[in-house]
Length: 126
Image 1 (cartoon, rainbow, N blue to C red):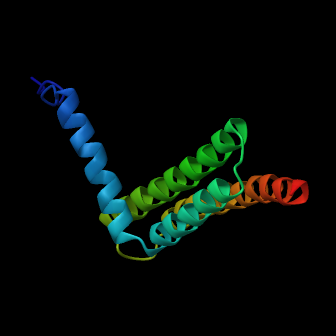
Image 2 (cartoon, helix red, strand yellow):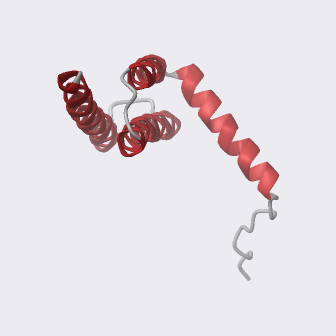
């Protein structure tokens, strides 16, 4: 006779949001890269406000910021999982970590290009 599959207890929406905010907090506190992204995000927001970008450009900038921060959180989650799985050399884990880091780099470069285009266009219009 086999045991029934694990069924976690149902959680409330409040508990789900609490856990999600805790994840953002843990990710932000544990990773220096996240702090750098937050600082750059604040600078982008300040520059966008100073240049009075329009709603569409605000939307694009905020979407880019969200994507970069989310990619950094995914990368952090994969790093913690890798440490929980194996503390030794593991080529598969190394590849997973490098791919996750590459995803952060791709989103950061894409966001920088979008921001650069938006700010260059606004500065040229001034």
